[in-house]
Image (tube, rainbow, N blue to C red; front, side, top):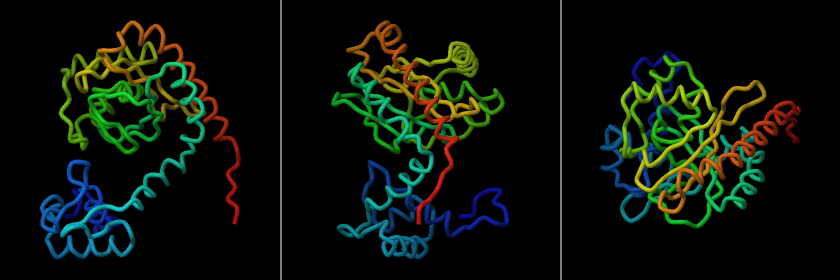
Length: 266
């Protein structure tokens, strides 16, 4: 299963192991050896060796004739979030924003043509789609994705969106290229993005970009609401100013964090 265009330093065994880990999804938390082999395109003996290796390392366990991931897999994602320091910086600001709006607030970053959630402060409300750390959605149909796509050159946007989504979700609305480009130009000009039930019915959100010390957009932060409860006017007139203020505070704190020397104690 070599990756197309892989260079001489590409480690195929590592790629296969990661392929097995990512084959497990919320709708298939447990899989048999045959299912893993089929999903990954690996031969059964190869899939078996990888699963047994992951089991010995503590990332996979046997379960009712099949295999499932263990909580240790979370260490892989937590290492990424921790290395960025973004969650530690953003958390108090997000909590204050949620207290003012009584709506969920999330941070996500681009990964190919998807966004991946890396931080979230949620309120107990029923929404159409379940969101947690690591959830991925098609970027173009989300406010979090739009503010990050709008910061990129047009040719880069074309290249990214040409990649297939790995979210497994079919968006409710798919704009044409002309509609997409026009909306991203508008987002770029005003500095924030709105999504009104483009990803799924009932989901309405507004997002702002998060920037590092050089001004580069590194993530997006949003306020997510249920369309039946929150009209667009309230989202834009009441929540957006609070969100923009929060995004500015997080960006400023993150920029200051970057200037602090990082020392690891032995």
